[in-house]
Picture 1 (cartoon, helix red, strand yellow):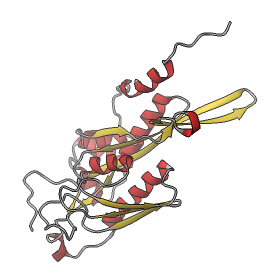
Picture 2: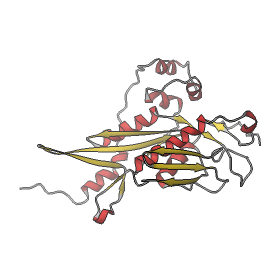
Picture 3: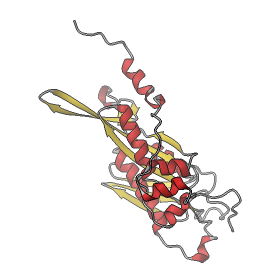
Picture 4: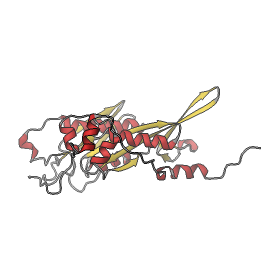
Length: 258
């Protein structure tokens, strides 16, 4: 007899995926940077970016930024009538073989401290929980430092609530243009991209997108490409105070010169 399946069992598994705790492991650094962080030689995450070190271990970020927040982006879609399935955190793919269909799950995670640092990672596995853990580790390894400011002509430079100037990122056919917005405008952008900007510490933004924006991974990586270009563009010293430019985290005692 065929085994009966309880109604709602699949939905229950999907809802409880985020509540599954990750196994605790003792950290044994495998890189020189990891050993310097563990020994206390490097105690500030900004020092890693200033010296151009490459982060190869997720535990480095966990130790230097213990207040990191994490979230899973909705890149997948459940099966629904006429393509109207509900958005889900994992994207399911199948490969047909002689033995049957082999399923794989892809997850996209974002981490950030809401103060100038954010990271995006993708994870793929035959099970949902390992894919989630891979994505969270990859997001920490891919951590980037964000340059913030107030470059909107509609308001004076009082605090780095937005970005200092307009930038454009691309991935595949997707184009994402970010433009400075005045204080109080909010994140005028797609919902999943808004999660990334919020964890990066950006509060107000204007945006314009084009291309196949329904392909969520391309849209997300186009946004990350635009954020990386913020730090690549050189800014003259006399404009730093005018645009309230802050790179990375802003300390509580730091005051922006108008």
